[in-house]
Image 1 (cartoon, rainbow, N blue to C red):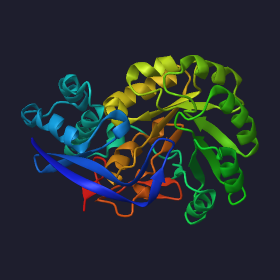
Image 2: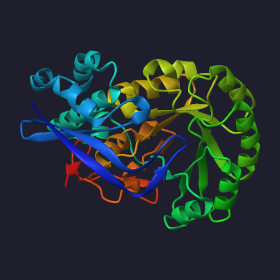
Image 3: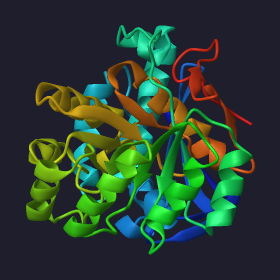
Length: 336
């Protein structure tokens, strides 16, 4: 098997701001695994919050090149078990390799990835479209220029309620809000009362990731469901979220790829938690991998490629929230 690494600097349509960072470009690493005339693709992006740079991603994967290139015909689960001990501090790199191997494996089997798992895609959830923090006027413009059935609104400002109030005047779509750890318990409970009246479906990660005591209070008293994001990184976090959150938002890059992601989804379902998979700001390479998990999810946030000024790949298409799979095997990705 041959390993190929490519780096990109993905330009965004608009400056993207959340409570802790602002970006105009997103550095990304694409992993390609080639074997028997087939190619599988995976993606990892840089992320300062988790101390992940493109250089770190490249170095950590290069250090394992010999092991990766001598792999052949193992299942994706076997491949993940073999390489995961070397990526204890870099689940982003592990994700890129794991997703690329899943893609390659399914292509060699002549199946779409969801077909490999015997999933039915007829009732897939719709993806939301994210409105990043900006002036209220600009947030209205971003929303109205991109009509969509579900919006995720990034919050964590002194004007959070004013933002949602104004946006609601311009749309009847479903609203979800994401505070990215920026609120207190008191703010969350107070905001939830108002946001519910404004037609918000749920709140994502209102408190700091390690504030489990505060989150328990929110869980017991919030009038809106609360989804974990930064509090649910690795597999062991799913059980911690039980009786603290109503559901979990799993990010494949944070947990180490499709393999642990599917286990986390299964564990969440077992505990009666709502299941969601979210994305980073990433290209169609990463988004297409997420798309094959849709039949197992209650909600999905896979709009990363829609936020880009230019994409680097063809794969799944998203129109008005609905996912369309290309007539290709694996994840369906082709690099431009």
